[in-house]
Length: 196
Image 1 (cartoon, rainbow, N blue to C red):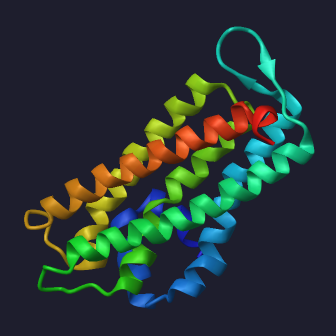
Image 2: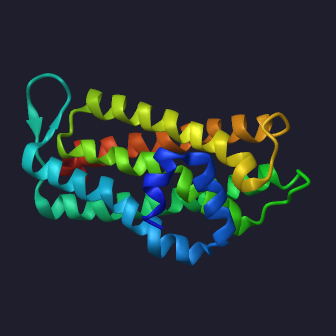
């Protein structure tokens, strides 16, 4: 839920434990957290690319027509929603070999909350300068990695020492998914007028 956002930054480990105790379902997670949080980078990118325009550091700004930006926004939004479910599935596959046996539902819920810093970093797209977006995205990725490390024992019941493989693999795959999303986002938002 949105009320967990502050807790994930102020006191992440107790907040992960609280989320775990709520036994949230995937539909509830999407309705009360992911759908809203994923809208942040989409709406900010739409505003930034139609009002300010992409800057690649050369002093020129590439604006996108609102109709084109809307089509890109819908695709971008759906990709992010799918990425949360895909990362939850990855976590479930990796964590299924541990004694705690977290459910697929728990793993997707966990992935949804771990992605919170990444969603929030989308605010920077109001001023879509590529290097600035990448810098803020790197900071958000680092904090998502921290939430992943803190949440494994608190949420999934996997000891930090034992869960090193889950942590490393999830973070690595998460970085690949993020890079794919960023590449697609830059292609769509940066060169939208050529594709649509």
